[in-house]
Length: 292
Image (cartoon, rainbow, N blue to C red; front, side, top):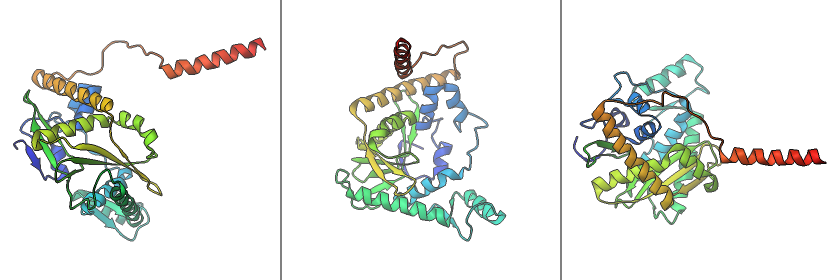
């Protein structure tokens, strides 16, 4: 592999096709939490990396994602069953996973189709995006591979990027409400500011363009409401800082072969401001009641 944009299978992407162990968005999240976790979860560093769990709870979201962006070729429809309890259904499900497909029952497939349909309408109606035909106007699931100035390799896999490379769309299905007013905390908790900064870095390295990065959130229950979220300059700058720190830390750990864990000493927790404020209200109320 040399730096460039490639059309690879998801399995090949996860296995890390770069010349040396590469940094990805998930590795950055692990690294900033604890370098030892990044080493443990990396397919090229840990001789026995953890196996992927075949959890069906994410299958509907994955299928809706594929239906919206690529037409649903990765879906394997298991017909004639209401659930996975029968042996025949389980065998069909396992066979589908064995060939890299997402197995769905008929009712699950209907849900995924409805989610994708609602999202497609939302995209067309969002005039700021300027998209009329998602599949014709962009490239889904490209793998970007590039090398930083300090020599480390990086990789990312944007959900969808426009042909002119001016817009990058990332699709998130969620069990939470997609109300924009409540999504800022969720974006921070999930490290999506890291994803935005890192993906833009890779796209700029290969395509010499820095697109507008937009998250599309789709609720996974009726009526499958959607919302579009970009990041403020302050939020984006924090993402850039985290990525820069992770790149330096990754190089240091690769060079030294040392991947430290959490501190081997007693740490002390500070009470968060909201907890202190809540107690202060309760304490004052208690004093008032005693005076009465």
